[in-house]
Image (cartoon, rainbow, N blue to C red):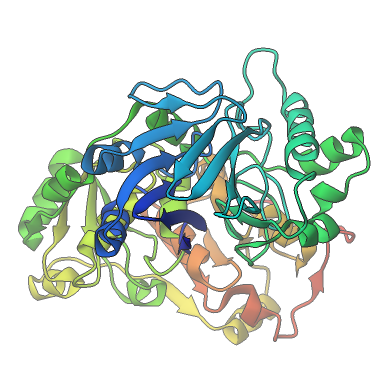
Amino acid sequence: MRIEQIYTGCLAEAAYYIESEGEAAIVDPLREVATYLKKAEKAGATIKYIFETHFHADFVSGHVDLAEKSGAEIIYGPTAKTEFKAHIAKDGEQFKIGNLTITALHTPGHTLESTTYLLTDENGKDHCIFSGDTLFIGDVGRPDLAQKGNLTMNDLAGMLYDSLNEKIKPLADDVIVYPAHGAGSACGKSMSKETFDTLGHQKQVNYALKAETKEQFIAEVTEGILPPPQYFAKNAAINKGGVESIDDIYEKGLNALTPQQFEDLANQTGAVMLDTRDPQVFAKGFIPNSINIGLNGQFAPWVGALISDLQQPILLITDQGKEQETITRLTRVGYDNTIGYLDGSFERWIDAGKEIDTIETISADAFEAAASNGEITALDVRKPGEYEAEHLEFTLSRPLDFINDWTGEIDPKATYYIHCAGGYRSMIAASILKSRGVENVIDVAGGYGAIKNTGLKRTDFSCPSKAMKV
């Protein structure tokens, strides 16, 4: 028996490779499927099944492409309706992989079709569950994504409570929990950095499994849920219908452009110019009106949160050799319309004598000096929960997640100091504001982590904020 967790940190997503006696199965595959095919080929195994725990909202699955390339059968849980060929399992239905048994346990709540897959080993012992977004390490899936008609978030939370108590908690304590996500995913509120655990330990430490009543569970699970990123519903719809092969997307997107071709295509198509270089490198020089979302961070989720149209043409400025990786990560959240990249990266743009722009970056000490010398307007672009836990008294909470909602309040002639926790998100915000005509944006390097080492006065949520209005 072989079980391998294939964890993708930038998405906080876990897929699984299961193998026994020359047969294999994949659970919740990502869009690019070559990894799974190569593993099976190397082991001399045939991929027999592709198990989907639910219609994913935070990434585009590779189930259809993988089925076409491997001949495997796609399995969804009860109530799922797909636009492609799939086997819709009954609750309790079993599937054989070599001498292993996979049992579908219908566990609605996160979504109506959510299903947990219980793996029983060759000795007939329950070994692990692939819990999808039903049960995470330290958390459970958010119950607000599948509201339909009269079905409310509280109704789904109640279903989730029943699923956990009737299907999962009765399993043995030594059963391993393999979830679909870890810390950083927007599919839950407080997931652990650990990516697997025993069910017994989760019963002791997971707040959702410790709830004594359904009412308590519903209250705790629904408290403090932020609106889902705008791309979630779009990705879920894509996963029900299937998508273009990633091979075709590479062919279209890996289009090397000279600086003049890049500029002409940007003007002709209205493409977003997406610069994926390191934030501090970007600040020193970039193509005017381009935006920065660094590849060395939670790149794809931020693209999904901030670029509202999945069909938006995208032109790339990347570090040399990172073009295909960038396109791959864009496709994971449904952005398939990359139309080219700047050949030779930004250095080629400079060599061509093209116009550039910059963003001023200052240290935390310089920020402290500016704040001490007079009234300034500072934007804290961290998430609301981060701001509420602790913040500077004079900063305004303007979460990056909702920048498309609050930029209308911004005075394009004013000067704004921007910080996040460490500098990644603040540069995204600064670049977007710059592209929208706000010239005087100043990024605080090191973010709140560096600011905490200054003498600037901090407060927490229990203290009234003295933040000025924009």
